[in-house]
Image (cartoon, rainbow, N blue to C red; front, top):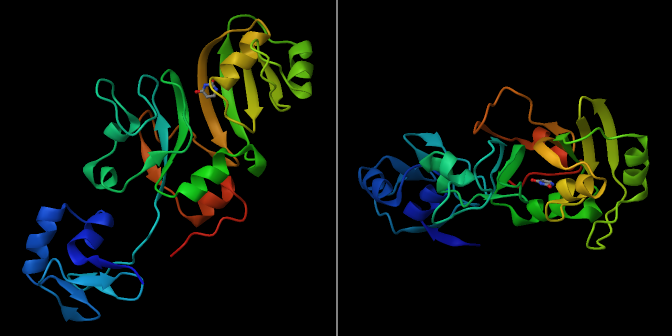
Length: 241
Ligand code: URA
């Protein structure tokens, strides 16, 4: 049983800031198991209590999951003193949830970025052992060919000797190709294509597992994911309630 201050519990749910919540609680709008609680530092276990605001029950969702269409030009880290991060693109409510990016996309890479506060989920998505495929669309200098497809299939050895797992390269023509990898080494896709003499000019992540970013979110757009969406990433995923 984890007891937490009522104002902190509600802040963690992203309801409002701690100072706003103190006022909300003092005004009697919050009930716990049906009784008004007006003391912000009263402690409760959110998993065993029914907490409600203005009569509406707040189900405590321990972990949150979002998909963002990361624009090129922002860092996929939680904070940076000089440069804009993906967290800066989120509203205050989401900024208070302790979200972090699941793996990294380079600053100049766009596309599907998962954000969560669930470390185990992030680990499962990133770990090559889980076999979660990441699909990228690359525009390169040059024209990838069948020999490149074969080299990807056999497992590229990078210029520094790093061995990559077998990957899939699909030729689209006009210097475009699709790359599917199951691991996330530093600058992996760029280095794999560079090792074949086809430097990447543009890179966009289209999908993680079977979850696709699509074009509707738009650059910097984001959406909360439910269990059904998350099962597209990890087939047997069960969301903790
Ligand atoms: N591979 C890269 O080279 N860059 C990315 O951002 C993602 C995968």
